[in-house]
Image (cartoon, rainbow over all chains, first blue to last red; front, side, top):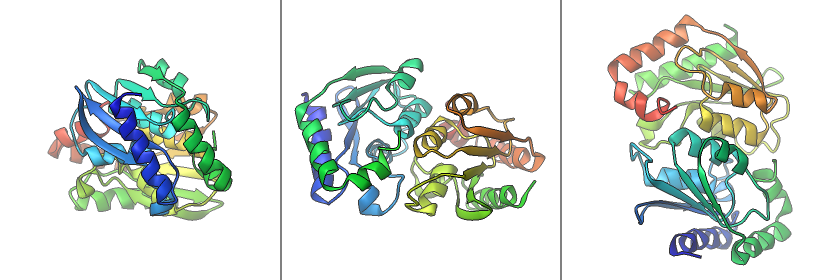
Length: 144
Length: 144
């Protein structure tokens, strides 16, 4: 696991400690972190704050996403995949697909480069959350 | 134009008056408005607040999107289309496709019912904004 995925995992742990869904994301360009964030559905009581979306928010209005990489502790769902396609983020590094392949095939069909892993740290953190709060997981990324 | 598209257009006008991108959206179920909103990229200085996303935020954690309809003054982009797919919103009514067909074909491929119009009120409001602020439009929905 490289340092950017470690940062994403740190974000996921932060969310878990806050009682939220433990998914983290980091946006990187040329080795520089542009933004990081974690899922805040529970914390903000809103469905829109997926990890990758919060990460894009925290990166701000950067004008272009050329040469950026979105690291996420799990494969982005269709919502986050749609954002990656719309904003033109050319690459995704995913920490696990054990809990679903998300929008992987769609991202590929739009030419997004995918690097995927099944890091046991990412899988076991999600497992801990799902065991505790199955309904919240179902409410969020469990739809598809 | 039915009353829900009129509400969406009211939201778009609100945004225009605030100096923001004039796109509005309304989420409806069985004739009841669950949420409404407008693009807030400029107002919040963040790329994530597209009209449909703000509308989903304002509707809150409604658990299921069964039988909902997303009205938008323009065809949803891939970001908003991804949200519609992920959350399982079964129908979209679009006010115009003159400024781009957005994620229409993708939405259709996921079984979303699309009803599309080219209302001159929606087109001319966008035209007014693009003429004034072409870079902001390009920064937001103009990528794809």
